[in-house]
Length: 201
Image (cartoon, rainbow, N blue to C red; front, side, top):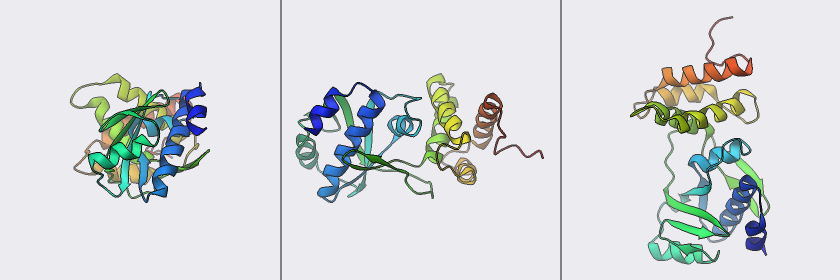
């Protein structure tokens, strides 16, 4: 019934949320916790302003599943493929390894039709996308993605910790605070709102 509903869903973002909800709920029953990451998380956080086209999830616990366990797990959804990417209800689902995050903020949670969906922290998503947009060379799709996430954050449509963005961007793993500030300032000007990086009174 759930898979039929997901297959019939025409809205790509709602389809992603429904599938993430079903996968999360089914895995939770087996003691497995998932986190939606990457572009998939940005799509859900921006209500479809950015669309990824697939669903990327990482393992929160346990941090490792055997190939057999992955195939058995995804088999519950009538999935085809593997061992990292499957087609489920007309959509590609990537079940990746352990979630990697340096953020100290909590995972945002969205209500879905079959249960709660956990997302990777938006602060780290922003810093990561800004880095990808400029290194090793300019990459406009990542910049566009970062701007859409920044716009949602500046519009206060999601809980967002700008102090955490600064901390993350200053870490050796990213070292891109100036690039983050420049992009956020640009989006703030476009939206005609004050940037959190604007130090003028």
